[in-house]
Each structure stands twice: as structure tokens, then as C-alpha cells.
Length: 441
Image (cartoon, rainbow, N blue to C red):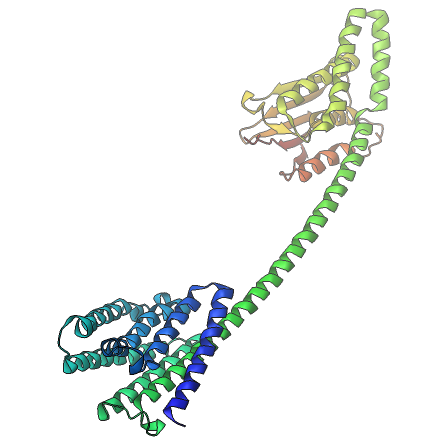
């Protein structure tokens, strides 16, 4: 194969790689493909420049600076592709110095080729040789450093860099033996052919590496999309489950509301209260009026209580005092209520009707007589707890109990995610400790 034919083959291969890279650059719009395009254009300018295309001065300038421009772009290209700044900081720190040397060298060639009136071939070749030697040393140092990187893309870059270094050294060695190539001679005797071969092998390695990396990115992107789809599906399922849970809770709330109303509007309590009211209307109309007001307050609070999950302690205490007045009207001094609540906790909260359930249970299960009074004590302590205590004096006759009172209170605290109330019975005392809930700001 003649050098001219090889030149067409080389140009076609580089042009194909360049075209493919430009398409990838347009498609992905990443800085790597832009730098790679500039890198290939610089090498194409170096290895495909013929004297009859340019003036002698321009030809000499391009001959010695195009490859330096390629190396200049290579530094940024390699860093963008391999993240050398992070992975090989020692190598990356040399790049600014190498760039500075290249810029100084290009300035020198501008002066030699376009500014000085006389041509200085020895100075021209000496500068070219020195810079090529420095870059060759730097290139092999880069190869040694790249060996430390074990990923596939780095291996492709290592191979490509090694190919162009070897091709450049062989070309440089032949050019020292034969300063002027005989382009009509055998291909293997032409120094530029070895540089071209090293460049094409380098571009093939770089292109394969970038294609592999792009394929890996596509695979990672697809895996991320699958993971996102799974997460979206999981969240959709969780959302549906949450909606079902909300629906179940709403249904349970409605059922609990009905049960609570049924338990709160105790027909026996209402019947007894009406009987008391009937007797008071005839015997003491003024007291009957007061009793009716308290009874209205009690049932108004009962019917409003389930509209909200929590109520302030001050409201609950005001209600329990109205409820206590009804009990006093019926039982007289047989029931006694003592309130010892720190004002600091009046704006704390608890589930509504909690105190009513406890007081009602105490009256229901214990003897209530003037000479044997039931004493109910409601107090707070320093740990933001409400202590509801009564003396135990159980009735001799068995009292039917559906267990709604205490279990209702425990269930409400559990649904609110609060600490469970503590129930304690000893030394003739029945004590229920209720955690008070501080209002959120």
C-alpha cells in the first residue's frame, strides 16, 4: 500500500469516527464529546497537512503546533472522561504546567514562522524536538498513572494513550534518521505513517471507551428508571393502603361514635335524672331550674364531645363539675369531688369524656351513701399527669359491666399515639393516671 492510498484510508477512518462523535455530541450534549471532537480535528490537521495546501511558513507552523494543540485539548478531555481531578490528583496537578509549556512553545513558533524575517531551521527543529521530548516523558508518566485506574473506560484510555505515544516515538525516531520522508517510498519507511497509525488506534480506543461508558450510563439510567418505577408503584400501593386504612378508620370512628353515644347517653342515668327533675319541679322549682341547666350542659357537652379527638383540661373540668352537680342532686353528700389541678396544665389536652367515664364507673361500682361517701379526687402532678382517685367501697350486689369505660379510654390514647394510662388498685384506693397532652404550637 502506498502512502497516498494509506492517507485516504486514514482520512476516511478519522472522518467516520469524527462524524459519529459529532452525532453523539448533538445527541447527548455533553462536554466530553465536544472536547473529543476538538481533539480529533487537531490530530487530523497535523497528520493530513501537505505542503502544497499552505504557504511554507503556515505549513511549518501547523506541522509543529497541531499536535501540541491536540495534547492541550487532551488534558481537559481526559479529566472530563476519567475525573482525574478527583481520582489522580497528582497527575492532574501537572496539567496546568504542561499547558503553559505548550502555550509558550506555540508563541515561539509564531515568532519563528511569522515574525522573524529570516528562517531559522535549527532553532525551529530544536524547539520542536525539546517539546516533543517533554510531552513524551509526560505521556509515559500519564500511562504509569492511568495503570492505577481499574475501570473499563480507564483501560481504553490507557491503551489509546499508549498507542499514540509509541507511534509518536517511532515517528520521531525515523524523522531523526530521515529528516525528509520520501512519500513515494514504502509505507513502513515513512515516519508520518506511524504517527497516523498511533492516532487511529488511539481514536478507536477512545471511541470504544466512550461508547462503553455511554452504554453503562444508559444501563444505569434504565436501572434507575426501573427503581423509580418500583418506588412509584410501591408508593402507589402505600397510598392505596393508606386510603383503605383511612376509610377503615373513618368507619371505625363512626362505629365508635355510635357506641360512645350509646354508652354516654346512659338511659338509666337519663331516666334517673328525669325522675329527680320531676320531683324537684314539685318540691323545689328553683332547684329544678338549676338542675335542668346543669343537665342541659351535660348533654350538650356529651353530644359535642366526639367532634374532636382532644379537648382542653379546663373544658373537661368544667363539664365534670356540671356532671358532679347532677350526681349531688341525686346522691347528696354520698358523693364528694375534690379538684386539685395546677393552673399551668389547664390548657393541656386529653380525650373528651375521659373524666366522665371514670366518675361514672366509680359511682356505678361503689356504695354511695351520706354516711359512707364516695370520695373522688382529681389532681395533677409535676410530670404533667392527671391522677383520678377514688376510695373503694364496692357494692355487695353484683353490678353488670360491659367494660366500655376503661377500655374506651385506653383505646383513645393508643389511637392518638400517646402513653397508655396506668390503672392501679391497692390499699383501698382505685387510681387511674392519665398522661396530659401538651398542645402543639
